[in-house]
Structures are given as structure tokens and as C-alpha cells.
Length: 364
Image (cartoon, rainbow, N blue to C red; front, side):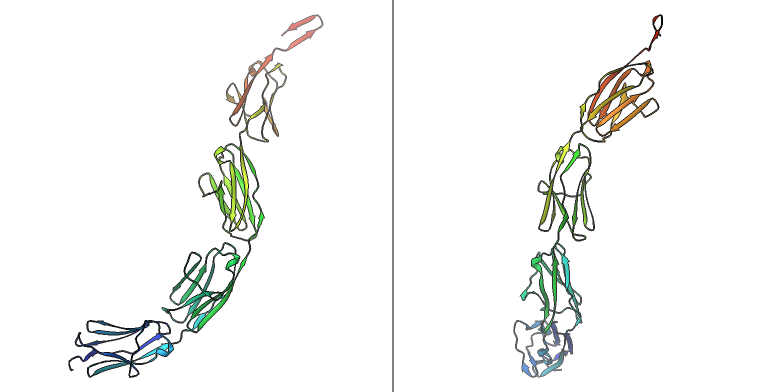
């Protein structure tokens, strides 16, 4: 083999349209200079067609191939020459785009599948304008599948979306349905250490809702529960105190509704009065509180009273009563009513029963 001869010849190459084609051979002398030919004519080098020299390797690269690039390519150095054929297969569509209908705030995903992977030069277009990757639009490919994701859709994103690769193209329409708030949150009044909840109902299922308190976004925690099921959304606040009083908002896309939480302390509004009854009579203590049907506790000399034949505990709205039946001297004591952080006390006095006889008055 003569000086500058080719030691590894070119091989035929087949690529899909828009893929990169690489034609490669090796020469015996790394310093040997040669030329690339296409159909016997010098190759027209440009931004898309270039050559590389690495040691003895000579490589011709066509970055984005087109049907007109097919033909016989040769590399000639001195009197040695090697040739190979480049074939460019047409890329076809296996699965095309489909029309999409989403609800406001949801993402829309367009995808299609081609016959070949690794293609270059594809474009995503909306209403005739080419799209670029951004916070709103995400374009990516995996193997033969190409995808466009439109983030957090609004009605302004409606239109015709297109995929284009050379002469290959596909179109689909995006429709965005408007969300409506069917049931707005309402003002809530809660007792100190109680539970408060705000409820929201939307026109569509599975729509993300942001909850805010005095303008700051809320996250789930031990005291805060954020719940959702289809169209229903709920914010639940546990063990509320005055720090949680204020304005709460539900934010859905560009929609928002607000309500106020008021936190009230439970208190006694009508205190107990001391009672005096004769033995065997029924003694009754009663008081009123600020809220309806709240839990309470009765104490006798500091000991909790349980319901029994002796002690009857009655609750009617805000009115709380303790009835002590068939009283005896042992029932005389200090009785205390406890409700929330408030407590009031009064004394029961039990007097001996007086018998009136025909000859006078005797005390038993």
C-alpha cells in the first residue's frame, strides 16, 4: 500500500431524516491531506456539513440530514480513494397529536410518536408562533416520543398547537374550561381551643386550591389540615387560639374568596347562687354560659360529680343545671361549675326538717 493510502475504508450509512450522519475512514499517515467528494464533486461545507481530523481518522458530519443529502460520498488521499453510500429514510408518524380539553390551572400534555429516535430540528408551534422552553411551556423527547407540556392552563392558552419536523407536521387544539366557585367559604366563629373549618365547592374535580391566612400561604401541619375530594375542599384548624383569628382565603387560579375566623372565649354569663333547702327536698343550682351546648363539669368540694339517682345534670342550650334530690346534711357543701377556663361556686345549706304538731312546734 502506498504512502498516504487508506487503511480503513468508508462504510455505507443509513439514517433517518434530521438525524446526524457520520462517514468515517482511516489513513495510514496522520499528516496526509485528502478531500471529501459527493457524487464526484467537492463537498460544499457549511454550518450543517463539516469534516474532522483526529490522528489517522477522517470524518464527514452532516448534522441534520435531508432527503437531498443522499448519494455516494468519497474520501480521496493521493491516489487512494474510498466510497460509501448515504441513505436517508423518511421519518413518519406512528401516533399523532390529539385535541386536549383541560380545566383552568391544570396542565395540558400533547405527545406524538415518530418512527425514528434522535431526530433534530423539530419545532412546537402555537397559533403560528414557534414556542421556546419556559416556565409555561416544556418541550422534551424520550426515544421516539415527543412531548409538549403547557403548565397551569388559562383561557389565554387556548389555540392550535403544532409539531413540525421538516415537511412532517401534526396539529391539535387546546380547549380550557373555566372554573367556577359553586360554594364560597363563610365567616366562622370558634371557641378558644376548639376546631374551625372553612368549606369550598368548585365546578370541576381535582382542581388545586391554595389556602392563605392574612395573605400568607398555609401548609398542612399538626394544627392545620388541608383536605380535598373531587369538587369539595376544606381547611380545618385545630386547637384554635387568638393567633389564628383573621382573614382566610381560598385561591383557585385567578379566582379567590375570603372569610373571617373569630375566636371567642367561653365564659359564664349568669353565676351560681347559694341555696338553702330542708332535708329530703331537692336542691337546684343553675347558671348560664355564653355559648350553646358546650361541655361542662360540676364539682362538690372539688370532687367531680357523676350522674346518679342523687345528682341530675341538665343542659338546655346555654342553661346548665345541677339537681340534688332527697337532700341530707351530708349534701351540704361548696358546689362549683366549670366551663372552659371559667368557674363559679356557691354553697348548699341543708336545714333540719321542722314538724308542726297540734300542741306546739317540735324540732326533730
